[in-house]
Image (tube, rainbow, N blue to C red; front, side, top):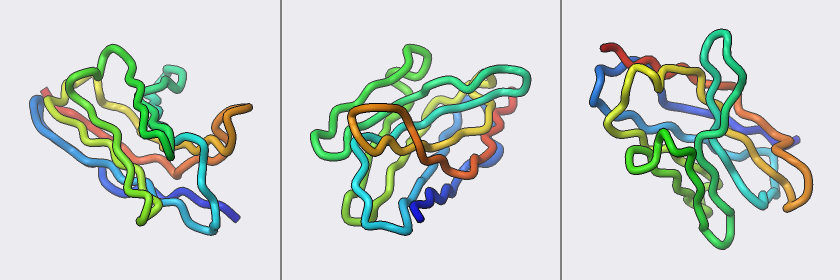
Length: 119
């Protein structure tokens, strides 16, 4: 049973940094892509960033470009989200997702982790 286990998150002041981690367990499982999404209270879940597992191509939503970096450590089956220059509007619950193939969507999800940015 594939599981995604998230660590990181917490409370930080505006301009601060945090790093989120998401480790795949229950393999063997090599996803086509991994991504981070976030969901603020009363809002829909939104895409933040994604990375292909083998080609290492990355995509970001416009609001985080230049501030967030997604990366992977294949040997550790882990994807990271380095978040710098955080803003209050980044406050959300962050979820990692795994996309098994190039078809379909993100079928596996982490448990979510709270990121709160104080002004």
